Image (cartoon, rainbow, N blue to C red; front, top):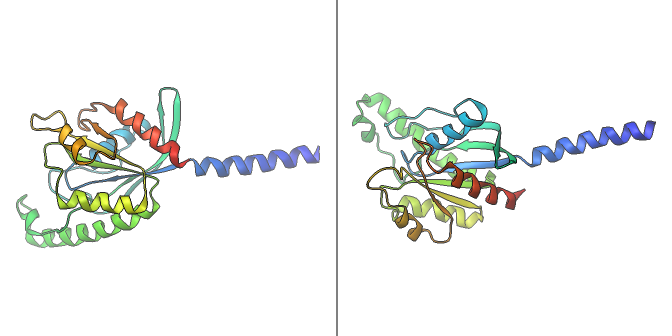
Length: 214
């Protein structure tokens, strides 16, 4: 009887341990206003009923790392638990004058610029803790730019599994093919975070990549 109790005790301990190890740290990266938070919000809202952060037309609305723990995603009869990590938009330079265009006063604009710069630094540091990274790009923009190259370069050095989302594919100027040609070494999914277009394709790829790190 005592042996059976001890076996059950250790079974609970180890099952809990391995359950925690199954939580995949999923990071959302990309340039400002590409739709990172919109995509993370849609996923979190669908599976937890809560959003991860606020969105705005003003650049660098997300200036700090944002988390949502224990997001259990169920898809096609399978289930995985993720720690969702939404990061500030990556850019090579943050100018406070960019905020003035959106009627933000000068004092607030300088504060936002400082916070956004610090947020970018923290985002790069956090790459070391990611299991899988989703790079969200605006499909209406040219993918061949220094920001995207910087993001990809940091990921290549760390050998992190990557999915590239060509967001805003519902817009007329969207060119998913161009993003595929720019980054042929990674899977690319054309979708619209705003309208939830092609979420099935997104989950297919995420589950494939997550299995590699479990």
